[in-house]
Length: 327
Ligand code: ADP
Ligand code: NA
Image 1 (cartoon, helix red, strand yellow):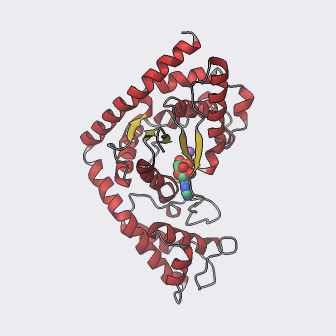
Image 2 (cartoon, rainbow, N blue to C red):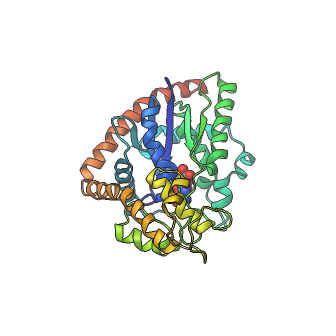
């Protein structure tokens, strides 16, 4: 749509996995054609709400840039940039934080999930959704692709736009959610939980940098059950259903079609078919990541260009905000 602006971010915490790709990045790529302006940010400020090793973080930022480019993010059609270098993000975050009450943040999912793992969570982890609201509003974004787990965070951004506008006059558009497909890819080892980069079982997650051998190895060891026929029954047979979903997603075919291809195969043989389809989809991406990783100069120059474009949008907005607030 004309005048639309998409914003989304991804943390530089390692190479994306197949769930990230099919659940988020694939649609990021197509949004480049569907919206008049799109911004994708490598949100390093968000990532330090968990402990990070500085050298590893630096590498992960470039790695994420390589992964996004390899997936099809095109810096001539979108603004790809590193969050922390555009300092307006932190500045707006402070101002929005002053409009947010403590209880409003207490029940948000990120805090509830991650602060439980330690005896005390940090202030940064607590106010993470305020920074997320700042990321979105700073560009007067109209559309935000989110996973189901992030809806409450987007609602905070919508609330803060309203609160700011009520106090200082109509300024921020209320961003609307673009709910990413409900297509959740499950862990290969525990098909009742989602595929995740933090899964402690190395065989559970397929990463975009996995070689064909890695992929075959992991899929051959995916949990199924004692029935040999291939059917799609997510409740009763979550492991087999996950393989079918995966197969359908990577090959762009319907679940029904994929099940019909598997007719006559037992689940063991079917795994070869799934692995082949996954390899076919991921191999060009893996090779491109590998190529880009060796060209750090290029990756840095892409990010420098993105920084300039992002700042040229953020800085006039922030100037207005300062005036409205009374600075
Ligand atoms: P992780 O759980 O691996 O840390 P994130 O929470 O950083 O992944 O998610 C980044 C994006 O990828 C989000 O938009 C999220 O909805 C999507 N995503 C993550 N895991 C999956 C999955 N298993 N299936 C589909 N989408 C996923
Ligand atoms: Na997340």
